[in-house]
Length: 125
Image 1 (cartoon, rainbow, N blue to C red):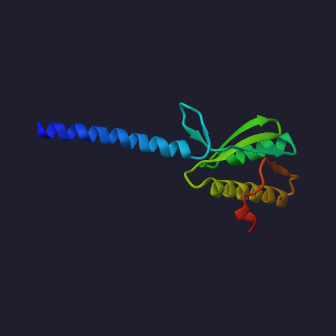
Image 2 (image 1 turned 45 degrees about the vertical axis):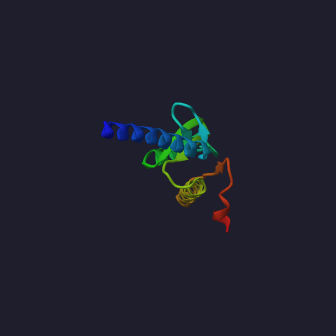
Image 3 (image 1 turned 180 degrees about the vertical axis):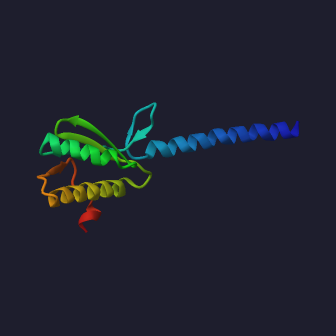
């Protein structure tokens, strides 16, 4: 009986552990979607043509840690997947997109990307 009673106390502790995890999750950045949990903000990228949009989607589709989906003929929703801080993720995505843009321009392709947010302050400093 003594071992059974101790096991019961552990069960209660597990419940308090679940409450602590839930409290931390409720303070996390992002939007709560109920079933799927918390999602990071997805960056909207506007391009200057549908051809550039297709090139961008092909590039992003080849990268395993990026989620991208077309929104319109000249608009793509992009998110960098991972568990780093939000500002670090935004900076990494910003740098990747600007590097791709510069590379395409160097190839002679007229590419202009407009991101829905400015780079994080750490990118400027």
